[in-house]
Length: 446
Image (cartoon, rainbow, N blue to C red; front, side, top):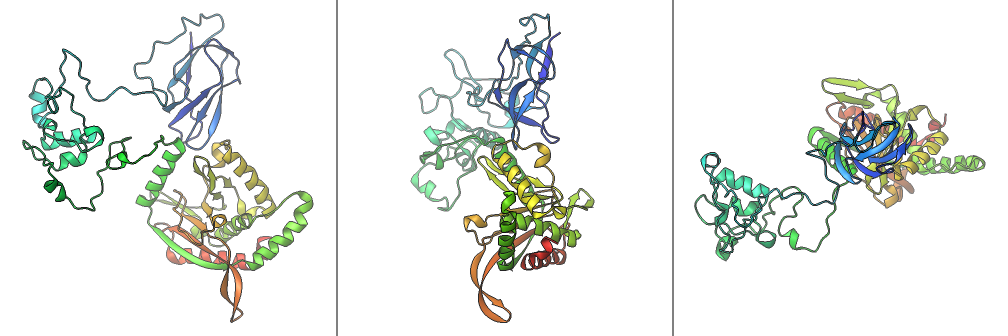
């Protein structure tokens, strides 16, 4: 009996993925443990190993296919002694299509001698009205070109699309054309009518995947969102819609930290370790969270979870977006250990080789854009974490030192806090503790 090879769940939260590449072809013999495919999740590209042995009888999901649900049969394996031809499965009726393939048109296509259903004038009439020949557009016998959103609005308003003139690309009817039309009346298209619209009106949102007018007329290129970018968009939208952010900013003098860093690097040079300011900030944030445990929390439904360990998610820029590898238990690790671990994690993050447990979780996050010269910014919380620290560049500024004006190296740091879980006073205590640890940094190595 043929063995079904199914899309695996490569992380606890994975629901779908992209079958990026097949490492075998039909007719190849595989053993348990052989690498057979590369699968792209929302954060990394991971290799998929065979767990059974046999012959690849049929590949059902081509390489490059997006949005393959976990559990989908992607290939068939013929067992030893089984005819590979007979082991082939019947083509799935709803097999996913590879990226870049042309999908079947969702709109009816007019053929000679055939008819198509004319856009209905109301949802009630649509159920009782028989199909009739489509009304020619502009007398040319062409089918009506309209976006799916425009068709839906027209159906709800009882507007006949055949009476409208589209303002979209190639005369396509879009949302704005339907919204201004009245049932049974041709939409006004004269300059006077168009002038009635406010000059500052934003273009109507386009249907999924469609570039709306007037942007479609601007020279441009389009590319499909990667799984990582889709996840970033979904999670950031969730964060801003569901989490009431409160922002607290402090200016921190870095001179003592920079002096200590220089001394530590001199002593660590024989071991090949070079500490960065970011490594020391990871340690400082983790230590501050231990000192102010009310900020080391998450909300899950009606439960407030307080953590006994500070696991710091560190934002790393990668070609397709952003990923946050985690320094587990950073509060209990030496800065040299944090530096070594961070270097390894960042390197594998940029190669897309992180394992799920290395980027999923964390009790708080740190995002440093100082290397880009950014002075100060507000970061978006990474749910379900309760806070994120945004770090700007250290720069020479006028600063009061011992009641006298002096020049100091100063950095602005902003904490974003989930106000459902963390009160402003508790967030302020965390920022105060962070400032003290960085300005008197010997406590980081004690």
